[in-house]
Image (tube, rainbow, N blue to C red; front, top):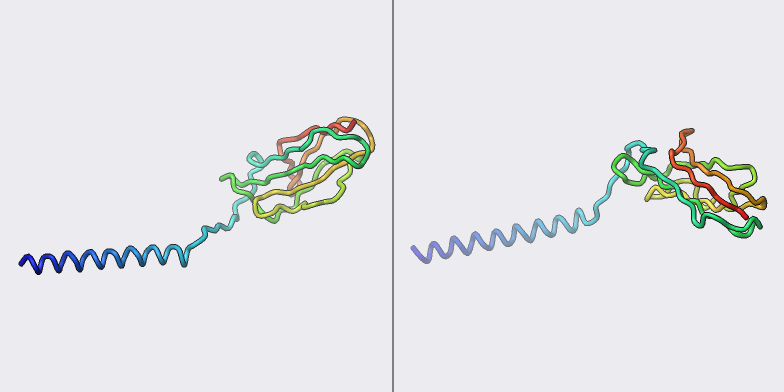
Amino acid sequence: MSKTFSTIITLFLVLALISALFLIYRTTVFFGKATTVNTTPIALENSYLFASPLQAKADTQEMIRITVFLLDGRGLGVPNIPVTLQLSPSVKINNNNNSVTDDSGKAVFDLSSSTPGQYPVSAKVDNKELPQKVKLMFY
């Protein structure tokens, strides 16, 4: 009976090992990378914009970069959304690097001005304004 018991235990352990290896293989081969499709709407209260630096020379050469992040209610970036900036006519978008959000929900703008002054900047999505605004200084 002890030989039969040992055989049953050995067979059980081999089956458990094979099952574990199969599950590991299946998980890593078929489901190697987690992906999500974000179809949830933009949460304006979670989205934000920031400027770097906050001031630059008013010579049209120095630029201030505005970065806008559009996020959903879970804090995940919302891709492929066009973003527009509300600017003073004195402030120009030099090269519209990426006014459509990327996979992380980021849109980037480079701004300059030839007129010294302090200018508010806000972002809009689908005619809805983000609650956060920044003030830029060109000197």
